[in-house]
Image 1 (spheres, rainbow, N blue to C red):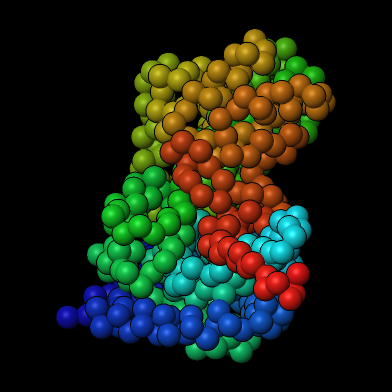
Image 2 (cartoon, rainbow, N blue to C red):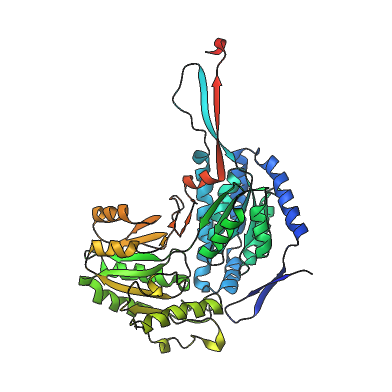
Length: 467
């Protein structure tokens, strides 16, 4: 019996798309095709791979307006912002293509008389990409483009919330002339996905998602001697020093907390503000949040859409309720957002909490919703202690005019990225990496190519007549 995958739109609760899940035979065939295609794709010259990948990225971008509407319908982001993700997809894709020449170039040690020596970067084989729904275009491109550029073949399994993204990527790959089998998508159950992760034909798995999902992927790969890249959750902090530009800090951190309804692994989920600025920061943050428009995300005026599912909304609200029960104060009146909870759909009013502390779940566990807690601090030492008091470590943002002080704090922060005077942003020329429960491995930048290749050394002693 064929299993059916159903995508329920958070906009109105209707089934937006249905797809049959791959049978065991279809999964086996996809892996076989990817393995066969790898043998020829790896030998395609880098310049030709770059031309094909560039055409693929451009084929996606050419459909930006249609893809933006589909994105909104699948996961609920306001339409006014959806096209921006396609633009980001193009930027990251083109950047990783450009970086490939240097990232994949042979490493040549200093000359040694009588020898030729070099280290070459070889592709690893079949790469499986497991991509999430919250930024389905951006997270997918992080792994797919460098994997293809390095000479690997790719099998993409996207979240059941955003299956059309995977399908559009496949269509664009064919339109761009990428050979059959080099890039494929597949809709699979969790059981089938675990089987693919464990399959000996798979050389590398790139997963983006929850800590629980990452644990399942890691367990499925256990004992297989294959590399796994895990980009997991976050509880990312922001710190406003006494010397910060207050208006810039409010604008940046509020947007970092509430954009995409807070559904970002590197979104701001907790804020620490120097006592001298605390009251003014809170006042400004509340005023900014109260200006959001929570409504149907297909409307151009909407700035805050629903969260992705009803169970997600329930989990977010449970964190807020727990904090209030423990003494926190909620500063946003839900009545300002009459669409919240309409007809049982996952439209959540945004919330700013004060009187919070680290005994509360909302300041410890990932919320992944339109909620932020704000605490006053006495200075750098207290802020640093609280920022590091987390099992997560993806990004941390500092707002300050003092670059030297920010750099010193950054050295002591347990995080993959340190921001100064900005947050919630990925620069494709910088390594994207988490520590602690935020994951392991790296995507983006030239460093992102390292996990998608293996080094191979050439150590030639020259014949006497050629010395």
